[in-house]
Image 1 (tube, one colour):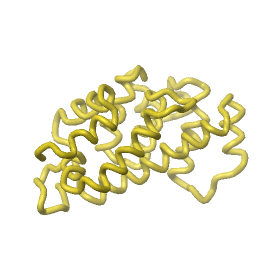
Image 2 (cartoon, rainbow, N blue to C red):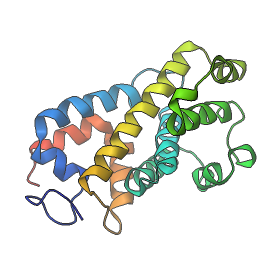
Image 3 (cartoon, one colour):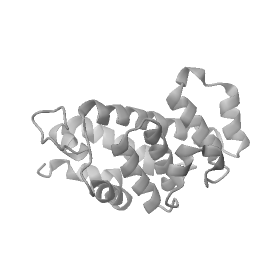
Image 4 (cartoon, rainbow, N blue to C red):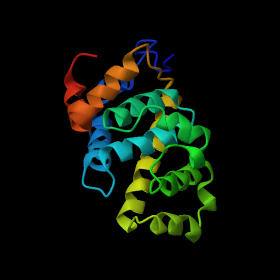
Length: 183
């Protein structure tokens, strides 16, 4: 139930963005850059990171939507659930496991990050740009999870699929185009 009494009880993030379009425009432009811009990671891998961080934070709204989006980009169904249950045995590409371990630790215990954590990412074949991009996705979704939970946003039945497919097809720039549509 939304804590914003001026909006419907079952408020989506899009409705919040439409109610507050100026910060939303900047936030969605940043999403587009981080999740769809040039990167060593594919859009599907970045959505996987977003969904993983959201799952660690128990943000069902973001976890659900970005799981659907990651799967729409080709991440096999069930991968995220398996990674959250046990990353080491999960059917995740071996090169991505240290990245997910890194963002997992950054999410749970940010002050405990060490050189060894970064070195594990580099040893898997990723460069500094990849580490930078993974940290940006992680930070963005820690922010978004707190925004969603702090505003009491919940997804109605079926919204997760609709939103995830919309993000796959139109990206975050396409979502920004909906800011001026009726809520």
